[in-house]
Image (cartoon, rainbow, N blue to C red; front, side, top):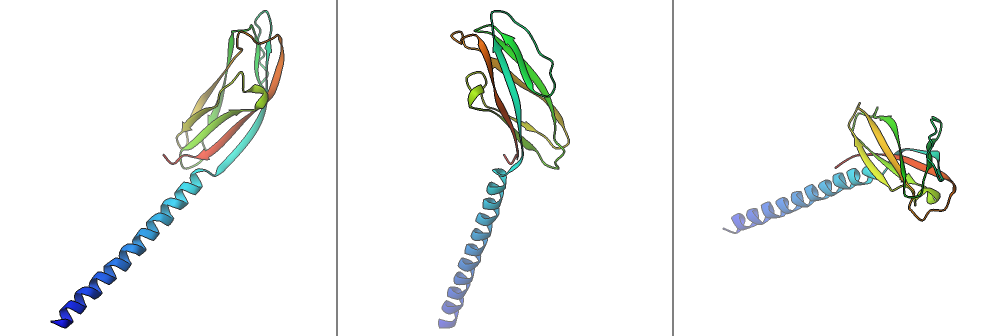
Length: 147
């Protein structure tokens, strides 16, 4: 009788230890995934500018993100193509630098593996914006997309 109780107790202890080991492995696995999801794969800073004026104009410069001329209260849009050459989906974050924040908001896109997607950026000049040339960097940050 005592042997059966001892055997049951030993089985419970073994199951408890195995359960704890499995729980630790699960936490380590999901922790690894979580840490990698925040890791930056690539980051590129691109110079951009917008001119606030009393008329509209455009600039087809391909080495910068040029929004051209807009009137106060107006907007301009630029598109760039991004290709995901990674064997997993990526998250693309468009982050305007300090000088461009009042014209552009932060945007995020998900691009599937081996796909190309057009990324749209629209700059808006608030109605109270004084005439002038405004410039700064826009960061394009690429991270692994998990969920």
